[in-house]
Amino acid sequence: MTRTLATLLMLTLPVAALAQTAVAPATKAAAPAAKAPAKPATKPKAQSASRTEIKSTASNVAAGIAAAEAALTPAELAIAERVHVGHLPCELGSSVSITADPKSPGYFDVQAKAVRYRMFPVTTSTGAIRLEDQRAGAVWLQLGNKSMLMNQKLGQRLADECQSPAQVALAQSLKANPAPNLLEPLPAAATTAPVRAAPMGVAPVYPTGPTPPAAK
Image 1 (cartoon, rainbow, N blue to C red):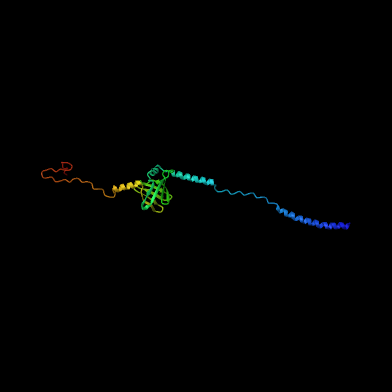
Image 2: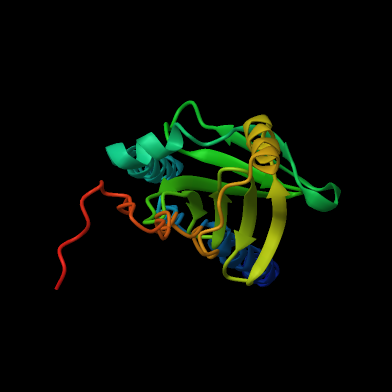
């Protein structure tokens, strides 16, 4: 009986040891299965300027430009009323188109070939009509019988001898009736008729009357 119990104990101990060995790795393997706590989601960085702010800034800039364009003096607006608009042919087959801006009185779009200028009137001491695009350095000079487009920054004349119908009519009138040249001398003034010698015994007649001038 004693031997039988001892034999059973000897058989039971290896089985228990094997069971503990099998359970221990499973316990260790289960530990890494726990998930780490999730990190809070990072918020996106705020943009420097939103689209709404950009649109608002652009609108303010446009409003400022419109306000600046509207600030013309009465003298400048009077000059703008005398500007010849439309399609003006020029020499060498070129042409210039001038269009008044209905939204900004006194401002004009001047186009020559593929170049367009934004111009406004400027007062001059000579009375000539002058339009300028100060940013581009372009000048439109309108005289009585012709006009010209110049670029002062480049020192070039872009178009010359440009004429509207009114300027063509004035040019033809000047050819038929040229204005007097101020450099030519004026015609000599008419002289008084010379005093003729009277026959003997007849009193001479002077231009001022029959009475001779007082003798010295």
